[in-house]
Image 1 (cartoon, rainbow, N blue to C red):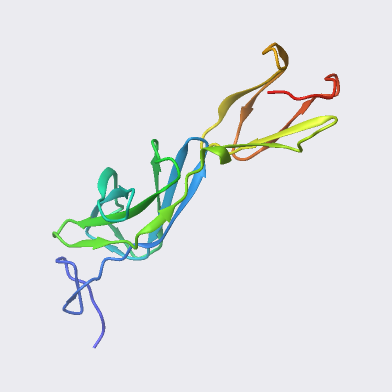
Image 2 (cartoon, rainbow, N blue to C red; image 1 turned 180 degrees about the horizontal axis):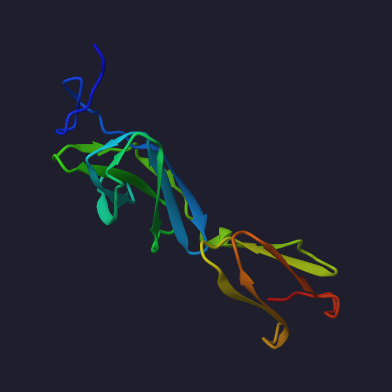
Length: 178
């Protein structure tokens, strides 16, 4: 016989197994973006997002609404606005409208504040390049100071995505700057 779906979340007489797949993370500016997808949703309600320092004790840090019904791959995103320095474990719980629950694999997501901004090359004789990644366009200001904390140069721009911006430093004498 064929496989059909009834209004109660059953396929061919068996409960549809809820499935969360491909949980991953990306560090952006001062946030950590979690991404995952589902391949089939049947009466899915919402996802709870959990975080842990040690991989044992998890706390819920937020939730996001599920599409609900789909036979196509659905991508999801959740942004942790206050990630733990050095990283954390993350897992998801999918809550179905019929009470079923499904868990994702647990992943380790590194968060290194030093990776937020990359400045290169160092040393640089002419153009200093700055790269950072943002989710939404953000105003950015690069200020260069000498050892007496006097501002010697400044460059402002609106950062989009992971663009690289250049600042001309040819007017600065060789030295150490902050």
